[in-house]
Image 1 (cartoon, one colour):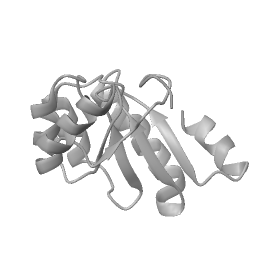
Image 2: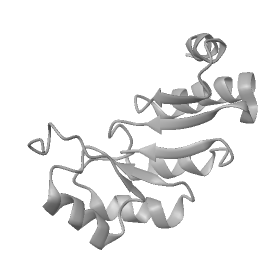
Image 3: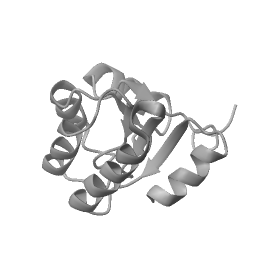
Length: 129
Protein backbone atom coordinates (compact mmCIF):
# COMPACT_ATOMS: atom_id res chain seq x y z
CA UNK A 1 0.00 0.00 0.00
CA UNK A 2 2.87 2.39 0.80
CA UNK A 3 4.42 1.65 -2.61
CA UNK A 4 1.15 2.41 -4.39
CA UNK A 5 0.85 5.62 -2.37
CA UNK A 6 4.40 6.54 -3.35
CA UNK A 7 3.57 6.07 -7.02
CA UNK A 8 0.52 8.32 -6.71
CA UNK A 9 2.44 11.02 -4.87
CA UNK A 10 5.16 10.92 -7.53
CA UNK A 11 2.40 11.54 -10.11
CA UNK A 12 1.46 14.73 -8.26
CA UNK A 13 -1.37 13.66 -5.99
CA UNK A 14 -1.31 15.31 -2.57
CA UNK A 15 -4.55 13.88 -1.16
CA UNK A 16 -5.03 10.11 -1.00
CA UNK A 17 -8.07 8.04 -0.06
CA UNK A 18 -6.88 4.95 1.78
CA UNK A 19 -9.22 1.95 1.83
CA UNK A 20 -8.94 0.10 5.15
CA UNK A 21 -11.31 -1.76 7.45
CA UNK A 22 -10.09 -5.36 7.17
CA UNK A 23 -8.07 -5.69 10.36
CA UNK A 24 -7.42 -2.77 12.69
CA UNK A 25 -3.86 -3.84 13.56
CA UNK A 26 -2.95 -4.27 9.90
CA UNK A 27 -4.72 -0.99 9.09
CA UNK A 28 -2.62 0.85 11.69
CA UNK A 29 0.54 -0.72 10.28
CA UNK A 30 -0.37 0.32 6.74
CA UNK A 31 -1.11 3.86 7.81
CA UNK A 32 2.14 4.06 9.78
CA UNK A 33 4.09 3.04 6.67
CA UNK A 34 2.37 5.71 4.57
CA UNK A 35 2.89 8.37 7.25
CA UNK A 36 6.52 7.32 7.61
CA UNK A 37 7.08 7.81 3.90
CA UNK A 38 5.30 11.15 3.52
CA UNK A 39 4.64 12.72 6.92
CA UNK A 40 2.53 15.83 6.55
CA UNK A 41 3.38 16.36 2.87
CA UNK A 42 0.10 14.71 1.88
CA UNK A 43 -3.43 14.62 3.26
CA UNK A 44 -5.23 11.35 3.86
CA UNK A 45 -8.86 10.34 3.72
CA UNK A 46 -9.49 7.01 5.42
CA UNK A 47 -12.38 4.78 4.25
CA UNK A 48 -13.04 1.84 6.55
CA UNK A 49 -16.09 0.63 4.60
CA UNK A 50 -17.97 -0.28 7.80
CA UNK A 51 -15.13 -2.68 8.64
CA UNK A 52 -14.52 -1.91 12.30
CA UNK A 53 -16.42 -2.35 15.53
CA UNK A 54 -16.92 0.72 17.71
CA UNK A 55 -13.96 -0.33 19.87
CA UNK A 56 -11.68 -0.92 16.88
CA UNK A 57 -12.67 2.39 15.30
CA UNK A 58 -11.98 4.29 18.51
CA UNK A 59 -8.60 2.54 18.85
CA UNK A 60 -7.67 3.35 15.26
CA UNK A 61 -8.91 6.92 15.33
CA UNK A 62 -7.22 7.71 18.64
CA UNK A 63 -3.85 6.88 17.05
CA UNK A 64 -4.23 9.05 13.96
CA UNK A 65 -2.04 12.01 13.15
CA UNK A 66 -4.73 14.66 13.05
CA UNK A 67 -2.50 16.95 11.02
CA UNK A 68 -2.77 14.89 7.84
CA UNK A 69 -6.02 12.90 8.20
CA UNK A 70 -8.96 14.90 6.87
CA UNK A 71 -11.66 12.42 7.91
CA UNK A 72 -12.57 8.78 8.42
CA UNK A 73 -15.34 7.55 6.14
CA UNK A 74 -17.95 5.14 7.46
CA UNK A 75 -15.79 3.53 10.19
CA UNK A 76 -18.58 1.30 11.55
CA UNK A 77 -21.85 -0.28 10.43
CA UNK A 78 -24.09 2.09 8.47
CA UNK A 79 -27.07 1.56 10.79
CA UNK A 80 -25.10 2.22 14.01
CA UNK A 81 -25.87 5.93 14.21
CA UNK A 82 -25.41 5.98 17.98
CA UNK A 83 -21.94 4.51 17.51
CA UNK A 84 -21.16 7.09 14.84
CA UNK A 85 -22.20 9.85 17.26
CA UNK A 86 -20.07 8.28 20.00
CA UNK A 87 -17.01 8.20 17.73
CA UNK A 88 -17.62 11.76 16.58
CA UNK A 89 -17.80 12.91 20.21
CA UNK A 90 -14.80 10.90 21.43
CA UNK A 91 -12.32 10.16 18.65
CA UNK A 92 -11.34 13.70 17.72
CA UNK A 93 -11.36 12.97 13.98
CA UNK A 94 -14.09 14.14 11.59
CA UNK A 95 -16.43 11.42 10.33
CA UNK A 96 -17.87 11.18 6.84
CA UNK A 97 -21.09 9.16 6.54
CA UNK A 98 -21.39 7.30 3.24
CA UNK A 99 -23.29 4.01 3.38
CA UNK A 100 -25.48 5.58 6.09
CA UNK A 101 -26.91 8.06 3.57
CA UNK A 102 -29.70 6.76 1.32
CA UNK A 103 -31.75 9.88 0.79
CA UNK A 104 -33.08 12.99 2.52
CA UNK A 105 -34.57 11.13 5.50
CA UNK A 106 -31.38 9.29 6.40
CA UNK A 107 -29.31 12.45 5.87
CA UNK A 108 -31.59 14.37 8.21
CA UNK A 109 -31.41 11.56 10.77
CA UNK A 110 -27.60 11.71 10.75
CA UNK A 111 -27.67 15.48 11.18
CA UNK A 112 -30.22 15.38 14.00
CA UNK A 113 -28.24 12.74 15.89
CA UNK A 114 -24.94 14.53 15.38
CA UNK A 115 -23.57 11.29 13.91
CA UNK A 116 -21.31 12.75 11.21
CA UNK A 117 -19.34 15.83 10.29
CA UNK A 118 -19.80 15.30 6.55
CA UNK A 119 -22.26 13.44 4.34
CA UNK A 120 -21.32 11.75 1.07
CA UNK A 121 -24.32 11.97 -1.21
CA UNK A 122 -24.23 9.59 -4.15
CA UNK A 123 -26.79 10.85 -6.59
CA UNK A 124 -27.39 7.47 -8.19
CA UNK A 125 -28.07 5.92 -4.78
CA UNK A 126 -30.53 8.70 -3.95
CA UNK A 127 -32.47 8.46 -7.20
CA UNK A 128 -30.58 11.07 -9.24
CA UNK A 129 -31.51 14.71 -9.64
